[in-house]
Image 1 (cartoon, rainbow, N blue to C red):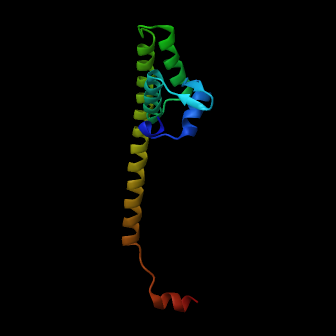
Image 2 (image 1 turned 120 degrees about the vertical axis):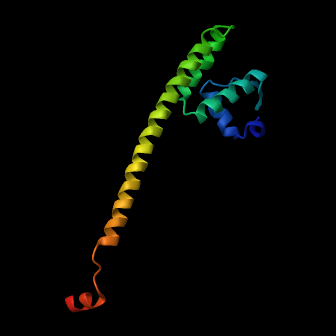
Image 3 (image 1 turned 45 degrees about the horizontal axis):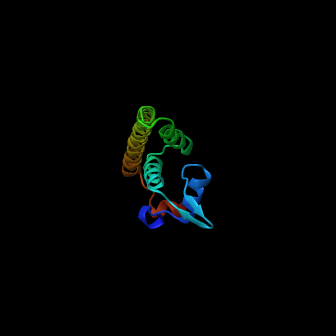
Length: 127
């Protein structure tokens, strides 16, 4: 499971502790089911999008409440749309900040090009 999803055993134990994965236990060994693999795939995808673990857990838990996924899919869509709106707002804010910084750099360069430069004689006579 670690190799397949490129995660550490510690990551798997963490998700198990957070009640996101439920492997079968055989002593110290954990047997991950097809369901666990599907859940881990969804967890990692949602984490990549910046969804909180609590929201991920809530969406995954809806699957258990409703076999037809009538509750899970609309909730997952709601979470995804909200996260997309947040990411879009963050991107727009970052774009404005980048444009501001670009303008400041250009202004500073123009200032340096037009500012009188002290001559080396001026510096030595001022000392």
